[in-house]
Image (cartoon, rainbow, N blue to C red; front, side, top):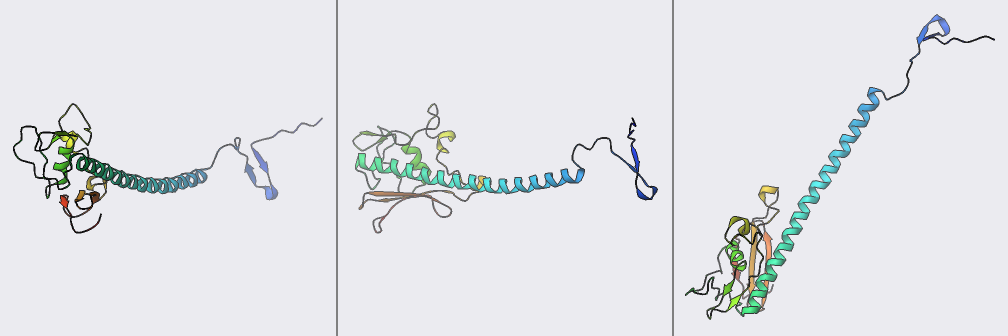
Length: 192
């Protein structure tokens, strides 16, 4: 019986010798670089898609927050009958009403987080919940709880909320805004 001995070199036509690799397993460097490049492109595409999703979700959260604020103001107006926001007292011993019309919306939101009184010392609210009940409504953790999430510090454009109360229609409209005044206004001329 003839036995065949394999060596690490074989002769091919023309007398050239070809070295045979002992281990043909694994990927070449070019193959690995191509796979890494494809994964990088996919990662960039996925990152861009998800960053847009995050911005859109923050915008939607601010729109939902505006609806919650709207419901809180509407509930106060229905409970108290104060559609012109002229009888907002911040304590039972206050002798004059707090001016909320043409004031900053954030001030009114702080008032809605606490108990509100009318001129007869009747209690209403609170209509908005505190983020940290151990703190007061004016503390920064609670005062900033209703700030828009899609703001300039997170790549967004909202600066606050515009609040319009329509006393004649008994309606309230709150929207997040990008420019303008974040004030509480009464509107007796237009519909909501």
